[in-house]
Image (cartoon, rainbow, N blue to C red; front, side, top):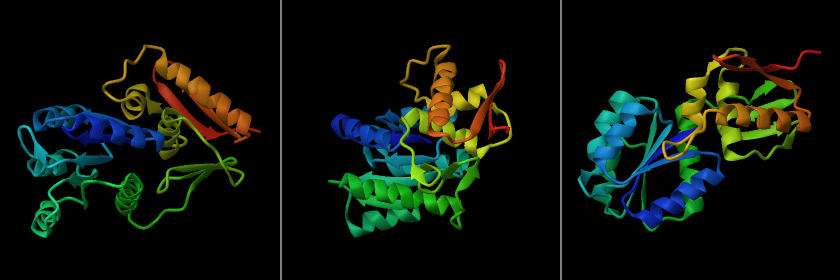
Length: 225
């Protein structure tokens, strides 16, 4: 899942991006409202983490545009503005959650997971294909009940394929979901990543296949007997 991180403190942003990456998210970092608006116009996000005190304004100014352009995205305000009135104004403006700095990263990730669970509504059962089970709410992968550890890009790729299992997912959408805008994406990067994920799933005995539609995209399906 792709995350928009709007934070002007470089060290904080770097630490947040690393923690998000360890949890399998792809974080796009910007430090100002103008750059955030440009990112929203070009990319699709499942979650936005917004600071309030930015060089060109209050992060809350972005909420109406974010809700209009990407109504399904969850919004978490992360800021030093910790007064009750500030929290109330942030939530009333349309944020899903509000967390004051300094932040405990474990709590932050718990809040992120809670936001995403609410986005799913009633908790859906894991998607099961072959021996593979993908819990979309927790973003956890199991094979025959045993947890499977994947690289963050492998996880992002598998999540996108699982959400459209049995249907071809276009290459452009896969690139959008798997790579951040700071990544230098080689023309063959997606092909290499798919090959790596195929091997990983094969080694795990997941009994699934990733089919290729040459020049179009990829599809995840149960392995044929």
